[in-house]
Length: 605
Figure 1 (cartoon, one colour):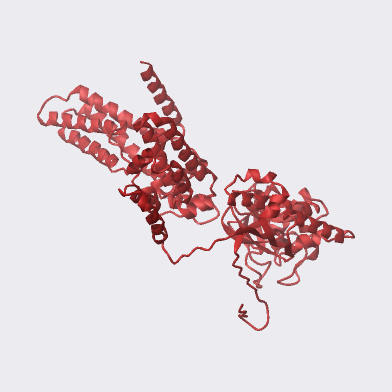
Figure 2 (cartoon, one colour; figure 1 turned 45 degrees about the vertical axis):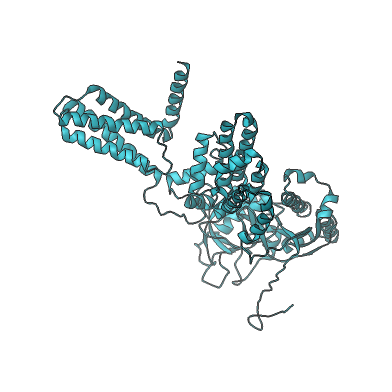
């Protein structure tokens, strides 16, 4: 209840209001415009029209580069877009600026229906992908060549040179009224997710249900949009229609709206807030209570009394320790012992399904559960069908988690870390759990790891920010370069053995060099974090080292080089080269097809 004023006694200031709600709140953010994505340009330079004059950073756009790579004065290109794609007489011509904080009322009024948008994220719907910029003036540069009609652009929100892409948007006056229904769609979807229901089902929910779930709304409707709606002789009637549309959006619940120039809103696609123009922002108070959590106690302190009350039902203390390990350690719990408890019926598989979304590392937890149930299907054949269904559920959960979660959340939570990527890759081979590795996000992260940096945290960061932010990398030799260097080593070793076999067969030193060379490749494979001792690549490299050792021993004793061992060594070389070429973009598919055909022929024989 204490109020304070900070700063100077006069001049500009800011008011900050903090609300601690006792109910769940939902944040909505939308705009009424349609993007013309073919009219897109990269912001190259920002500043002032002439000498430094105190303009807000990023709100004076000087230079743009269009989709064809041509550089334009920002005001000139925007005016050209409006003339060609909105209307010939819609946008006023550029004029000379009267001062550093000047704005053109004619441009303000015209650009209310053809603003610029800045791409925020590629996830989500069009209401959360772009933030709007309201152009406030088109002005000639103070220093421009004689006869050249070059102009810069001023806006009421900022951009970042070299990072921001601006897109032309359009709307009709009626869209400013009717498209507030986007807020209702967002609200219904968020309510459905809050109640663990499908978001698509919320779109057909009756208004009575919405009326039961919300209590009131605080919202912002941009003054630029409001002035366009209120324009003309029928402005009063249009404002009454706007009030009716907003009341319908919120199922007749009370709302308080005001009209500022500039809005703050939350973008789910990037999990960030942004300052924008010409948008609608709302904070909806639901009827569901928001329970407070006592953060003074640790998770173990909260959990122990609950498990202790159940301990009387487990006199042999078999189930309770496993439950504690499962709840506290999550994906590091002893799943082999847990499988036996599940088979006895002491723990239900549904408990694991409920814990998967709550785990600190949900992808690892779900993959471990999928592997456990897949193994249980082999251990207990009578219940194989039931256990395979549970395994399929966790496999589907894992794939949906990676595929549906916004990349910003995956990056912030570190879902795709080293352990998760290794386990997902192994599960794709061991239990045919290919849903995770087949998702576009997983493929893109692996591509970044392959081409730039093997650290998945850096790969996810680079993928998230793409070309709009600084790249993270501490790797001088990315995996792709190391792989092809390894392939080059195999090629050199093959060429050396071919030379020694045909030209200098009794050279003990060269055969010893080949032995050391092949042994180093074997050690390199053994050092892999996910090495499989019983596998074809390991057998091939062991055979190669054995043949080189055999030939070297024969030459040391002064005997003739065994031709069969030499031939086996060359076959091993060609097999290794073939395996390493699988990752080649052009040769890889042909090699995979050939190996598949050979495997099919082997099965037929």
